[in-house]
Structure formats: structure tokens, C-alpha cells
Length: 291
Length: 308
Image (tube, rainbow over all chains, first blue to last red; front, top):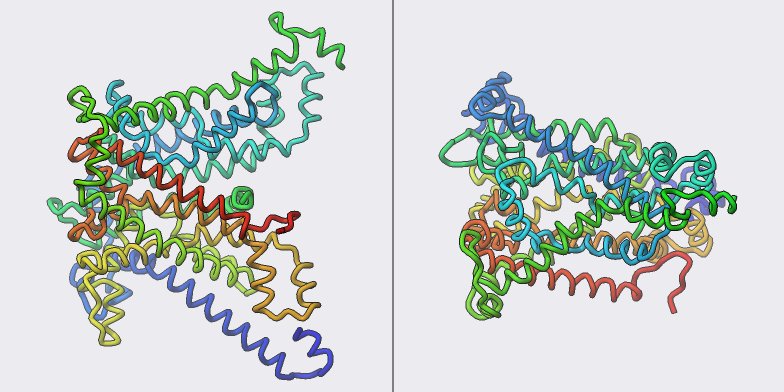
């Protein structure tokens, strides 16, 4: 509309002025909004380097007089944070292998092979995504208790090796876009289905595999509930659980140390995101568009 | 090729039989997982919901007692349901509107856009524990960032998580910080709207407002639909935030349903009762999801279909 108006009345007119005005407003809103969203992070980092008297001060200060790295070292020495880290990395690494293998196998089956009941089974798979985990909570706990797996990392790892509905769905949608002619060609070359899956389809699914790897990584890294119910002794704690013990009143950990440890535990997730940012967005485009 | 397919056999099987057998083998991991971790536990949990069961002793059949107690003799059930509904009713729509607003802003050509997108998205990567710890400090009544800010204007802020009135609003504000996950889905949806629709609307003389209501919103309804369902299901299962920030208090003001269920199962060891609670939750989620899905033909617009 304004373009047509500008054509009719050349020069700096009211419409062009309005256009520039709104762009400036837009830029300001975006800038202020993102500052508000970043502020809690800045507040956390700033607090994590403060001395106690600087934490308890009004008006708050943003830049502490000196950077107190003790806030990081002390709680790290006091609580077995390196053990928490090790446990979390174990869970995350094994779950990555588990979900990539099992979900892609199942997705390949659903996308490329014809067998009776395939569509109904796939529908069942989709509907399980709506089931709240609380429904299966008690019996699952009972099962792991009977197996003697409570207070070990196994309940956090083993179920992942059976594939997750969301990941299977995502990979199946992606596998459907790989041309079937490739399978036929592989068959003529004497490949069985397993070889076709591994040599032809898997390499082509790499973008989608990257996406579910990132999702799985963030979910497992942040997972609190399973850790809370299955892990009892600190030597088995994951990071999410270890972090929570910081606010226990018996321990009394000062705020600057809580913030320091919080920051330390989120660095891997933030780093993975910043490195793989493009893949991440791409994955959301694949998953989000389905509606 | 068909000759090959018919004559080539594998352990005596024809090609089609082999495809069938291999098909089941490929999906076997999921079938096993489904039996062991979904359908088996579902049946067991339905059974437990009719029993008195503490994990230590054998379960005792009590018929409908758990369900009767829920509806007639447990005020906390009603409280937790009401807390959860109030949270969902405010945080889901507010989150959707905010996510859409931010997505539309970030869909413009603005210098430094990648930085801004990252800024809005980053918080949604945090887990419940880290997120809650940061906000407990922001909401800290005496020295927290928020009340310090309010004090600049001479306003003494509330006690937030220690206040019966402000604890739930506090958790809602906290949830809005994680709006980036939904925002990025909206952004993907916005970028899928073809330019020619906007151009056509402009030709017809539609201004910005009309283009928004008649092009953007209809084309975005599938994304809104997706975000709405995920938002409802997620908010009804809120747990970590309340568990860490308030433990359900003060005076049950933030006793979320999932938290009350957890308390029954793992603090009071009322596993049968917790299972009954879980089935009620499932029923609620099912009904709400069905309502959204059933209503969708009236407001969700899929490209290539026309509303009658």
C-alpha cells in the first residue's frame, strides 16, 4: 500500500516517514525484549562471582569488585559434582546410542517394509505419545524394583533402547522421503534389508538423526523426574538431582555458589545448541510443521 | 526382476514372506518396549487403582474405594486439580500469544536477527531444576532482581514463592521465560506462508491488520493447534518447578496435580491411590485433547481444503 503511495508522490512523504518510524519502533521492541530474556542469565553470571555482602545489597550491583572463582571451586569440592557429571554423561552417551539405533530400525521398518497390521501399529505408536507417563509410573517402578535396578542408572537408560515414539515418528517421516528406487537397486545388488537400512537409508537420514540426537541430549541432560524417583545415593546422582540438593537447608549453600553450580551444569546444553544451531532449527521445521 | 524376486528365497521363504518377517523384526524393539513399558504397566496400573498397595506389602483389592475417596473425601484432590487448571488456563494462552508475538517480530528483516532469535530461544533449553533455581533467586523477596527493580518505583514487591497469593503467578511468569520453544515453531510456521498470499491481499487493498487476521492467522492455525495441544498436555503435568520452588506450598497454593500424585506414590506410599490419580489425569487429558481435536475443523485451516 505504502509502496504504491510512494510511487504516486515521490520524495520523503508521510508514508515513508511512517514506515521508517515503525521500523525503529520494531527494532526497539525486539532489542528490549531480548534484553529482558537475557537478563536472568546475566544476573546469574554476575551473582556467581560476587562476595556475600555484594549479593545482599540494594540497589543490586551488576559487576562485582573482584571475580570470586572460589564460588565455583568450593561447592565443587564440597559435593561430588564430578561424579554427578560422570553419571549424567554416562546416561546421555548410552541413550544417544540407544535411541539412534532402535528408533531408526523401527522407523525403517514402518517406512520401507510392507507387513500386515503396519498401519494400525503405527497408529498405536502415535497414540502412545498422548499417554501421560504418570499412568505407567507405579508398575514401572515396581518392575525396576523387582529387577533390583532401583538406585542404579539402568532405569534411566534401558527403556531408551526400545525406541521412543516421538523419535520413531520423526525418523519415519524423514525415511518416507528417501526414494524407494534406492532400495530396489540395493536389492538387485544382493543387499538384504538390514544392509539396505545400514548402508543406504541410514547415511541419507543423517540430518534427521542429528536432530533427534540433539533433542535426546537436552532431554536426558535436564531430566529430573526419573532421577528423583530411581536414584537414592549421591554416588548415583545425575546433575539435575545434584543441583537440587544445593537448596537443601541442612547444607546451607550461599546463593552465589548455587548460581555458580547452576551455570556450570547448563554449559554443555548451551554449547551443543550454539554449535548445532542450524540443525536444531531445521529439526523444528520438520517436527513443527506436521500440525 | 519379478523372476528374481520369486525365485530368490531366503531360508526357504519367498520375497514377500521375507519382507513381512523382516518388517516385524525391524519394529521388534518398539513392540517389546510397548508391551513391557506401556501396555503391561497400563493394565497393572488400572488394577492397582482398585487396590490398597504400598509396594512393601501385597496389594489388597478395595474396589472403587480409591475413586470414591478422590471425589468425596480428599480436599487435596480438588485443590490440586484447581491449581493445575488455573495454571494451565493462564499460562497456555498467555504463552501462545507471547510466542506468536515474538515470532512475528523475529520474522522481520532486522539487523542482528540471529542474535535476537538465540536470545529468545536460549531459556527454553534449560531443565526444570536450573530454571527454578535461577528464578528463586530473581523472586527472592529482599534482594532478588524483580523486587529490587520494583523498589526503584517505590513499590514493595510481594513475597512471591512464599506468598499464598503470588506463588502461582510467579510460576506462570517463570513459564513465560521458556516461551522460546513454542516461538520457534511459530517462526517455522510463519516462514511457510507463501509470499503471494500477502501480495494478493495487498492488491485487494488489505492493510496490515487485515492481512494479519485474514492471511497470517488462518495459515497459522495448524501450528496454533499443535502448540495448543502440546501446551495443554505439558502444563497439566507440571512437576519440577513446583517441587523445587515451593514443594506445593504455601498452604497448598501450588499443589500441582503431578506433585500431589508423586507425594502419594513416593512419600505416603499410597501406590494404589496414586494410580487412581494417574487414571483421572489421563481421562482429563484425553477429554481436553479430544475437545481440541473435535473443534479443530471449525478453526484449523489446512492448505488445499476449503471450509464449508
